[in-house]
Length: 479
Image (cartoon, rainbow, N blue to C red):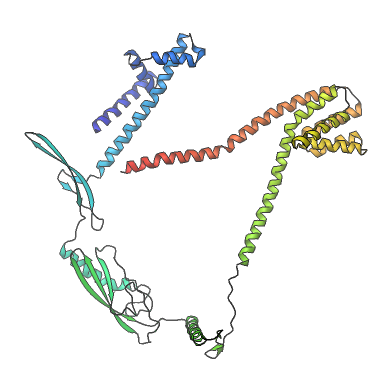
């Protein structure tokens, strides 16, 4: 198979150099080759493409170009997939033979000591006068074994090193006050170690030491280590001297108080309450309840939450303000158009505002919509009814809106009242054109922001798809 893979790869290299020479693509080389030898059956595609693209119908050159692009797109995908498959096949072929178990055609390499057995798939081929006979076999090859002499040497070495290993946190096995480290195996040695104790009340097989009741003179315990490796089995005895725990003053006092509490609890077991000891060793004991108080954590948690809520509320307010400004900018062209319509019909500015506001009030009551700019216009009508002059009402309107577009509108209305000119319609018409242009720009900007917000979910989906593709490919490559 490797010969086939190599031939395909060489063919790709030849096509690549030929494409460089002719300044075209690999798909173009293959397409021209197939067209000259009439390999492609273009009749079906040649009939469908003009139907799908009416603009090329009846134009021979454009139909031919569309047909060429159609087949070249197909060839590009085909060449890419074949090349990718060939490269992956070569990699798998090479990796599968880099760790070959058969050496020189007649040896199987064993795993080293402690690695474990390995399974080998073999093919036996027998050449005879009647032909070639092939048979497949699967054999489990055990790891390399130590020779008996080496096993005994390793056992002696481990027996000498074991006392220092099992002593653990103790000074030595001659002075044991803490638990022992009774290991089951030691790196570099092939043995499994089984421990036995001649006094399990003092030393357990897991190394735990119970020395609370031992006197100052201590006691000796014999630990037996059994080394096991295949058929080899040998016992070694280690004598450990157990001493009582080496308590500090605080630890010793705590131990005495604990024993005193246990005795007092047993003494008062038949009464409805237990009396706590008042003194120990002539020293007075003052008792108090140790309460697990989680109030500090709750306080810190709530303070942190309050800070976050405070921050988020301020941020939420800013977001609402941004939404309000955005809505007012979107409503600005419509409001200007309505104002122009009523002014063009002969109404005064005051009546125009009143008409727009009254219609909004009816629509709001029927449909429930809310628009900030029309709410501001309702407020202007209320101010005018309360006796405020038009000029002051329009100036307040511009200041309350807090947007340059509405400030400009307010200035136009105020100047018209001051000068009494008839050019207000032209000014409003120009302002309406600018407003509609700004609205188109805003709509374009909002669309771009929406696309940006979708970028992160799209990247996450791309990552998931890549994982779904690459993980199975990786495991199949490893196999």
